[in-house]
Length: 322
Image 1 (cartoon, rainbow, N blue to C red):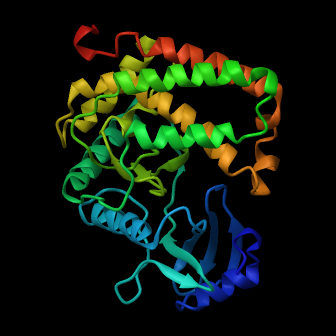
Image 2: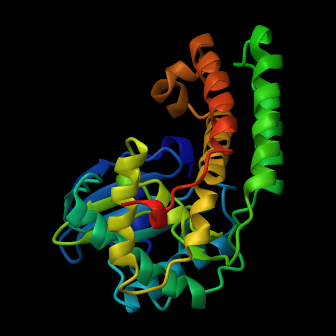
């Protein structure tokens, strides 16, 4: 079965192999890394099927993602749950791995809504309590060494970077990698969502945490910092609100606030490398046409240089905020 050209018939056949039948409403959802479809089943209601990109994760890594989500659900964390058949949640059909999930109701999460932020903080703390007991030994570790070296190699091979800008780009990139290495000093690493932003959240009387495809071991603050936006004062209000909910369930180590800018820098670099690595997927040039433009790479040089300076700015601190 061709991952890049999944047809409705192929999806029907894969689902039928585990006893689930598409009755109506098969619709592709917005996902670039995997192929994700929502549909209606007369017997099981509204479901979401997720077909995993080949060679991104091993079978053991995907199984650990699913086990982490199931463990979180058992502990009362608001997550979409994978369906299980005979004790298994990962299925295979014609060499493609896939899972099926309960669709959860809700509307877009509002990051500027303080009530929602506080509730999210509580849910993340519950998730992190699970992450302390589920070791995620098969999943990646959030550390700069291996990951950034790989991202740099991917970017070196990217022909979209104009020759006239390559020297400036890699000079800025190397300075930022050196800065991350200097300032990123994580303490305790636990199981985390890894990609907690507004697109992976829904709100329905409380937050739903979606898409654990990037779950890994890392510092707790990784699941908090992407919800912060605006100027420093606005971020302090948001952070205070998140932690008000968080600390009802789990103590937060304030020393991790110093990791926010190194983590932001790692995400910037890894995002560029992700686009470069996926450029041969037909969906990517259509969705990200600006990636192949000179303007984009000029903007990235500026952003990398600015992020180098951000690493040296004193981190957010609630103790100095009044």
